Length: 85
Image (cartoon, rainbow, N blue to C red):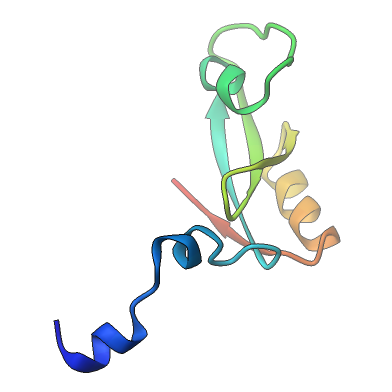
């Protein structure tokens, strides 16, 4: 690592908070994955695909049936949306 890179390196704590309150990521998610991210969600038909919006730290924000809904949720909360595939 160069000296300049070492000066600009983030601590583990700083990295964990990177993008907090500014960035949200959205991705299509299957019914099978939802239980871990959205505790208390009712059972869904296997194979159901929904769109989820998460805070930069992975905290779930919303769940919707359309990508446009996830995008709107990010913008309504003044978050910059990024899409994960």
